[in-house]
Length: 140
Length: 404
Image (cartoon, rainbow over all chains, first blue to last red; front, top):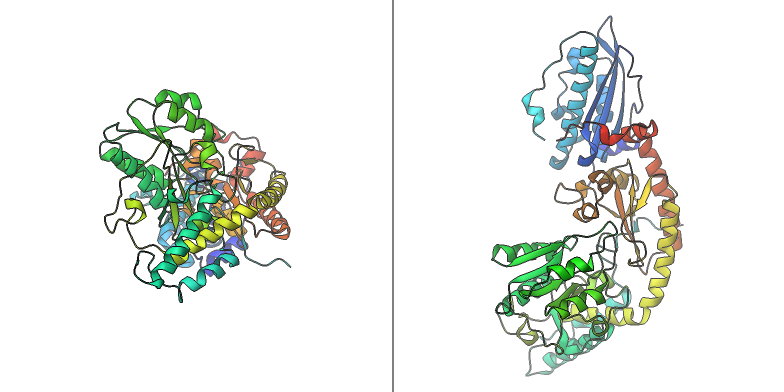
């Protein structure tokens, strides 16, 4: 299977690889996937409590090139967005951006799950209600 | 400078030896006859060429040329052996014994036979990939017509104790079939010495052309017969109808002749290079060789690099052609069933790469592979959350993963 140029770019030069201090109040962490399934994504956001804007985003991913690229794109998009705006990022945006083939759509779904998990982690830490998972993202 | 990309996927297929191609070429054009045409020189020439190839092939495995049945490849040979024996010996019994790590061509054929009412026992393997001979002895009954155990495994290269298996099968009155696709041409395979009754093998795994293979069917002690699975002109002693693929058969013959002469040298060379590759790559922390390290083909190495996913790793070594036990590389979504059968957890199966060397592999290629795999593993671990957790001492098996 041939990869799109954008996947190759994000795989070879991944943006925002790293770790934020998960013990901090304003850091939200999402860990999704499972080693047995061949992909695990950890996505973290740092939020400015005043503005509710995401000031930094980091990821680490165990998975195929498409999984790595999906999480790299996700972190790029998260920075600068408010946590409410970030909730609107959908897996199909990632599919489009990276031209993911049908067999790799689950990588984008995982990235969407990671975003939501990170935001919800932040929300719960800060006394906000977690936003329930939409049914759609369960289909993988 | 080493030429890229480098091919280290020789268990999938091998590059055809140029000497094989040279031998084949005249049989596409000048000598294009049908080997079954008995009435003119075009046919005679083709038949003569086929007969010669049959001798070359028989010699490599120490068989009689009349024991070689040409097929389209190992998959067809596997089908013909299992279904053909099940049909032919239906009055003796309805039970077949095989192994969970067999190639799909054997496993799926066995499952098909199950659907048709036959009984099949699938033996498990140990962590080294070898079957338990006591277990084999215990499962064979007086209804067992066939024991089918592969010679060497296509993913991990592990060689089963063929001679002992054949003895056990025979002592209990069953025939012994082996899928030797990965072994023939790479290590000495002697059907007499090993006591093999039927054997499948294929040209393209041993520097010959694709689309041609053979089923060895023993003619005496005992005389074995299989029921044809295709109806037609009754070619190949009535066991496999269809006009013979003369150019490819000629190539198959030449490939076997070359292996007869060069197999031992090839084995010494590839095993030295394989050992070098393996020694260097297992210097990487948390890397593990899969399968038995001694009872193994000389040119194969299957290594898991923990906390790195196989397909992602292959993308990082795009100049090296290998394959992975990871789900994403195959049509199915499950990781390698062979590695799982060894007791490896899914995660390690996802993290595996298979390296397959050939007579064309050079030392420079191996050096290049070592360097790029090492670099890619380190890079990917730097972005692996699992590696980070491992380094922090987190027990990954204790985490409740969200399975999807």
